[in-house]
Length: 291
Image 1 (tube, rainbow, N blue to C red):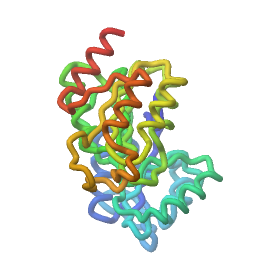
Image 2 (image 1 turned 90 degrees about the horizontal axis):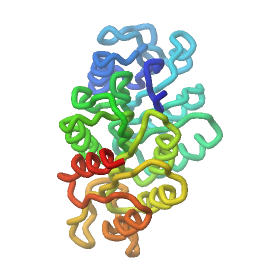
Image 3 (image 1 turned 30 degrees about the horizontal axis):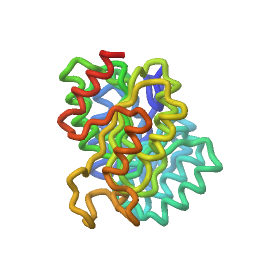
Image 4 (image 1 turned 180 degrees about the vertical axis):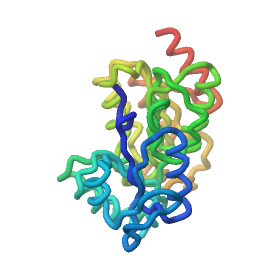
């Protein structure tokens, strides 16, 4: 068992005729993921870099059994692409697109609530279950199969912690990049619930960052329900006060969302916090081996 994506995943790439869409579709296929083709309205019936192209997600689902969408559609049209996939009944939707307007994402979240679809992102690196399927832009070669789940708001730190874990001989069950936007499809809480129920996951590495209250909400879930050890890191520990940093969600407002506030909540919940990103792999190894 694995969460979100596995060997049965059949991916349709929305925006496959764009440069990013075509490039990453090929990389996912090279990893071993079944990429059935792509969707670009008006180009149905053609092929692009060897992939068949349809006008709609409905056609890809009906003809090739697509059960996962990977989205590289430009920001102004990304919300409609997400909702098209959800309306088709695609269970897992991964939106890589950066810069999707927050007002559009509010509309998307309301729409998704009436469907059975789960959205990862936007503005995220995607999801990978090592050795089974890669749906996103992460470098597949740094991953290895194993028992540690990873969930992160930062794409770069996702790659960093995976590199550290793999270097220490610790594989990953599934890695989920939830993205750094203020309005996202899947939260830390959602991912932690999935990992808690996954028998292949024995520990979880959670990488947060300043801004918002997602880490505090995750800490509450861990304290109340999590049955597996959780290791945490909060990016932005040295961020200058009053300075907006990086992601759209990394905004400190009214004194809420500071790194220290998040660390206190996580430690109070029993999460093993490492204050430096250089210590992530070592901390996971220490906690995991001890358990």
